[in-house]
Image (cartoon, rainbow, N blue to C red; front, side):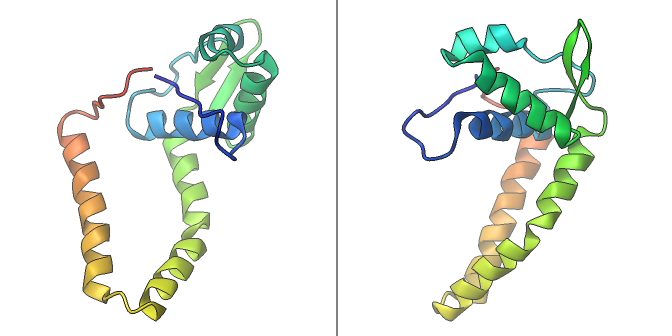
Length: 136
């Protein structure tokens, strides 16, 4: 289920973009699957349709969705690859965070354990067929 936090400092459209990308990475939204219409999602979330349209436009710009005139938006077959490439661009931030952890005296083994735990948890999710507790 899409959820927005009106109290968050993050703009609503960015929250939607993040959730769509997460749903794609978790296999909840599949390649070439039709996205919910702008109108339908805006009513469901009680937000301005322009907010949903802005999110869909950003996803289209990133190559995560594509639009078919008169039919709507669909998940791009290359969505996972495009999301992964964008995430790789942020590895510098990850390295900076790890450096700060090291400067703060956090043991390397603890950081490695955290990374391994994250990968284990994602592996368990994919072992269950990519299903998640979240529903759209």
